[in-house]
Image 1 (tube, rainbow, N blue to C red):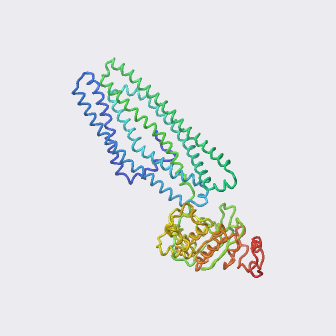
Image 2: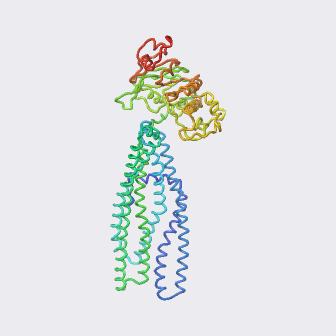
Image 3: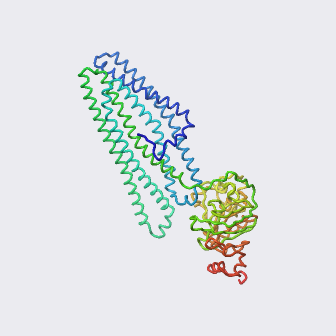
Length: 581
């Protein structure tokens, strides 16, 4: 009945191997627990005739023996449940850990298409459901199946003809359970999809509430939310209805079987083929079978729901991964920062290149500004340098070594990024600057001073131990950007990448950040991307990109004198040639 599916619960079996000791001890307890049922069935058969004859001593003896067996059974059940819970939870933990590690290597283009709310639901609710199914399978479904086998064996021994007649109903029950299970899994997948969509909408709504209010769009958002929760309710109701229908259908078959046993048993007693004691044991065994059948039925429904959850988790494995480091990757050590783009072409769709045979050279310690209209390929150039994407043609060389021959982690430790929109994780300011790296308090403070951030950090009530709230909302945008600069220069990178680092700031905040940037840029190779061209005039060289190709290059003064695309862009922003000002 529990046949392997595309989700492949059997693929989780290797994760159980490290926990064989707990599984073996839990299995021993399970054998004791299941083995007690045939003994209790036999005792029940002996007890009824003793009650009928009025043999009090025999009744008390049988009751005492039954209590002893029952006590041993419950102790074994506790051992079984407690010992087997650990491996099931650890497997879920290992599954989460492995999938999260894999998520961190998903190509950024693919990652940006995934819903944060959906991913959150998969790593929380779906992973918990998989854990629950594993636990129930190990500690409940397996014992229930063994109990069915043990008690049915006892019933076959008591009266095989009567048991064979009852077993004619078994295929019907199995078929019904499988039929309902398949429909429950399909309904569960629809329900989980709706939950993921609801989680995604909630994430968008919470982040976008200021925008919603600014446009007075609250009724529109409320209507969207109510539509989502209604679709979610309908999907969940479909699942509940299927489960609710299954119980009475299977229950009716069980009752039919019980009455059939009573009728056949009475006939066999009348014919002298079965004793009262045998029928008592037989009926007790039949009653004992009802509970494991109910457990297997319920657990199969949950197993199917777990299949849906596991399938959704496994979908993460099918997302395209970043290119792996080459087997013969070279150790790069400390870089000087000489950078060359040699005939580099790249396109997210190879048929539509974003960069076309790009040639660019930046000497160590130089500041290169990259300007151009939106879509020219500026940010793509930085993503190639960080190995977020791989060039389809040409080479990018650092200190003469093709970056595709380097280990990605070592490369990124030498190339630091200050993005347009700063992302920080909750924690202290010192932890935000360290960002998972090992650094002393003095090194953190030195990086903050270099970024022009030390003064405002020390002025905070808890200094470097000040807790940053989610998304850094308890500090200003300029302060957050200076923390990002400190984070970038902490590891003393050879290359510093500035991607619109001041575009979202007001004039006062921009001035403070610009001072931090000037200090951070000293002695490093720097690539600056900026739409606000006033921020790139001091660069050693400026490159103008358009449609993925370099259309002009030079200093600010040279480009302004020459006219062309750069001057046109500057004049649109009301920047005048400094020689004429």
